[in-house]
Length: 151
Image (cartoon, rainbow, N blue to C red; front, side):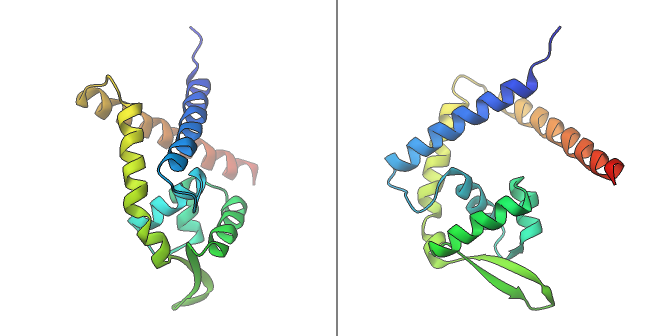
């Protein structure tokens, strides 16, 4: 039997991304786009973190994250501050402007969850999320092994 998890996850991600962009417009949120919303989501849950921690939390590559942070900094959503204990590190922190957008984004996120999980029972949602977390753990581990093997 042919397995198609990669294709299904890709299609789900594409549709969710397009729908999220439309919903942000509908809710009048034009300060950031969907991918930048992922960055803000991580920071809303844990402000003042390193770029590496932010990369781990968003799944974005450091180079991609750096350019996105540049744009977000120009929009007044985040600031880069030197880490007090290590001059080589930089903390990414939210601005008051970004903090003020959290509730609006939360409303969009709740609506996305309603649409995404329509027709699912609570038990099915729990199982689906646990299974996806296992898949994520597997691919993260495989990526780490691959990177170590290539060194």
